[in-house]
Image 1 (cartoon, one colour):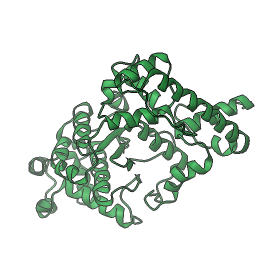
Image 2 (tube, rainbow, N blue to C red):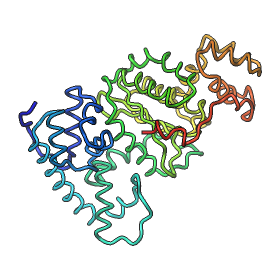
Image 3 (cartoon, helix red, strand yellow):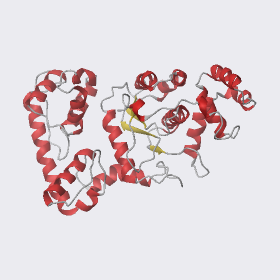
Image 4 (cartoon, rainbow, N blue to C red):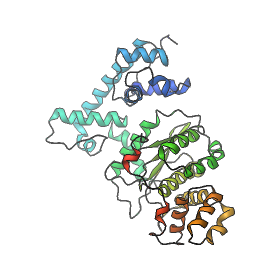
Length: 367
């Protein structure tokens, strides 16, 4: 399609918003667009999140791959830059202190801030969060902190700003994941295949398969390490009317913690729909009903209801545990985690049966 698209300027809408909408509307995969761009997927992410301005070369690629004209995309970029600078003018003048409290990815220690550096830092935050005022930020992100779905237990001492930065970074990465429309029933149909992935040892083997299965049900799975002061294990969120996200941090670096988090977040999506949940340690006495339901869902994924009695009578014997894990269809490490949680064994017992990873092992699979 080469004809010009109708364009009504939005006072603070990135060109990436139009790009994302066109890709979804026309069913164009991110890989298809990225392969035409110098820098591939990294460049596409920059175009989507606004950190890479659309130049003439980019505009030609977008016109050829998703539609519109070169002049449309260049005008879209020009309109955005004008709107962004207008928003920076206002924010730097009246809200700079509030904006500078919010962390953003890749931030380094700041020295003395000149007026120009303040503008640069404010601009980074407006672009990253895709809002033009602190009121807009509060409406989109601040309410998550006040919601009962943002679980802050006695052991959850994360800085709210760090958690929300991680969540927003995950949203931006989810833009690159092509999914079918979100459908809870389709996700339920794939649960058995998902739980069997826990038997695969290496993240580079199971994570792509997990992403593909979830994408078929409208769920973008994103793996992203948390920043300092964020102790979240996982999050679930509806990022578009027809697209959900499960964000995973690999916190704990063991298979029992990772897969319990996966099942817990999928449980939130199936049981609790479009609400936002950010989860840290998922056990405790102060959990609300939603968290308890998600925990029970995850436990049933590991030990199916029809095998609960057999599991409760399971002796602390490696061979018997291996046989049971085979019948249950999950990794033995997940059973060890459940036995520890249910106080069938001590927290220091049988940990050698779990699979443990190092951050270096995960470098290739993190988004």
